[in-house]
Image (tube, rainbow, N blue to C red; front, side, top):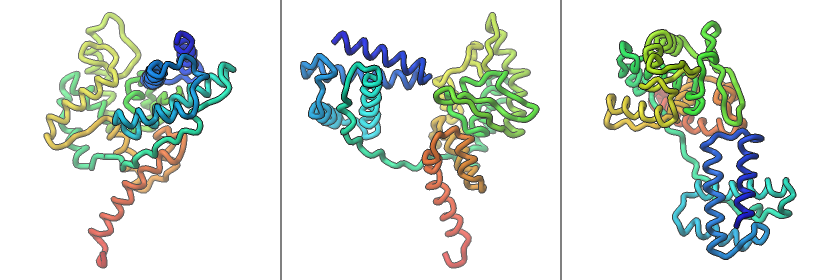
Length: 300
């Protein structure tokens, strides 16, 4: 099995250098491929070229038996397809046995979003007279005001913000960059935090770092840190309301479309490569329109 692990290392280098994938994405690829290596070991298969279509079907059956969700199974098969595709490109293998494997269709879930009164509750919970309260206020204003991903939010540097024209340069998936406008509420919150709370937090560090958001020790805020902050804020607002950071992104898109924004503009703001990724929000806006119709039309 030594060769297969060497091939995996080559593939990881390719994902890091050529594809510029995030650490989280690379961990998923590695986990999925190593899981398949374990299957090969169980089946006494030593080389990747020995894998046949029947082996892939057996592996797929095992994944179903282990009660994996359709989404997880799809991801694992997709990871293995990409791995084999890379090995063929490198002239290490000649065939991709995963090409013919049918991936289970993903369940279409309507994105969860927050209503305006719920958002207002979150904006009123932070004590903006404290450094952490100022940071938290700036955080929720940026997440809701721009619709950026949590990973993109962690990556914001002070130099990325242009207060004069009201935009942030955001680095998204695959290193793609885009400019996103933000409003006066977000600008006020960020400026207050930058010139007051952040300076106090950064005084705990020997050297300043370029990132906008810092934790209580003055270190750059992480994805996990943002989730922890939001969970704490929710507990102070409601025992019923449950949110995850991505809901700010869903809410941003839904509210824009509900107010008449066109799909292409929302696609660009979200940084979606394909319009189909943005179109999922039309299900939400249709529900909104139906409720409006039922509530106000005299013949509803």
